[in-house]
Length: 265
Figure (tube, rainbow, N blue to C red):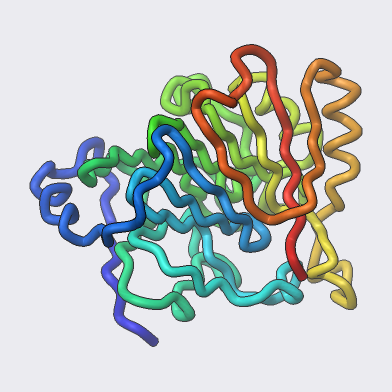
C-alpha cells in the first residue's frame, strides 16, 4: 500500500501555518478561465474539480458492488477529500502521485483555499451502523461547492447554517442504507436551495449482473420524477457526457437547475 499524507483534524480551525506549508504542494496548472471550474464524474460519488489552479478529487472508491462496472479512480489531483472510509469507500491506493488527503471534519486553511468538513451520520441510525460521513464545503475559482458525500441523516439547523446556500450541490439520491433516497434528497434541495444540483450515488449500468443485496441503490428515475412533481420550476438537464464546466456568470440567478451526467462506460 502506498504511503500517503493523511491530515486528520476534528477541531474548529486548522493552523494557518499548515496552509502556508501546503502552498508549494499545488502543481501549477494551465491558466483557467476566471470564475470557472470543470467537474468530471468518475462514477458513484467520485468527482474531479479542476479550476483556479487546483485539482481536487472527492471520494475515490474501490470498484465493487454498485460500482463494480466503473473504472478504478486514477485521476491525478493535488488534494483528495474523503467523506467516509469503508471497504468500498475512500480507496486511495490507485491514485498517482502523493496528493494530500483530508478525511476528518474541521476547517482547513490551505492557501488559497478554505475547506470545511462538516460531520454528519452515514446512516439513519445515528451512525451506529456505518459511522460518520463528512460533508465537504469549499470555494474554488469563486464557486461555492458542497459535496454531501454519503449523507443519509436529516440536516440539522446547525448543519444548514454551516453549509449555507451552495452554488453547486453534489447530492446522493439513490437511497439504500447509506445515502438519501429520492424523497430525502428533494427535501435537502428545498432546505439548501442550491443553484445547481448534481445527483450522485444511484444505480447505473455499473451494477449490471450484481445481486440486489449487493447494490441496494435505486436508479435515478424516481428522483428526477419527484423533482419534476415537487419542484416544477427546476430545470432538469440530462447530458450526454461525464464533464461540465461551471462558470460563475452562467449559474442560475434565480431558481435551480439539476444536471445529470453520463458515465462513459
